Image (cartoon, rainbow, N blue to C red; front, side, top):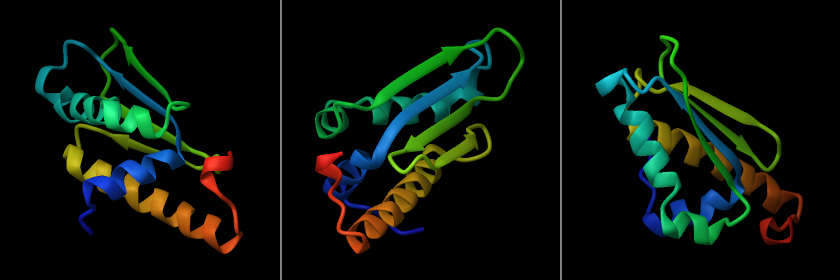
Length: 115
């Protein structure tokens, strides 16, 4: 997977509409990747780049794997079971998808700042 510079990652965050992380608070280390993803997406730099984004975390008491759901401005969605992938792999996958949306917007002469 390609590596993204910090500035590029923050710019691509503009293409995210919603982030939802669902986890069981008693799952311990299984939540590590989901919590790290939530921490990164809620950073001040990301929120400044995209103040319209909706970031939500849900704690469920039923036994379940941590799940990450990301919805983009083109209404596409990506979902991961966070216990299976390290946080960095999830971040790179969402950035690749956002980069594809950015390319599509450029081909259609759309501007993300006007949405």
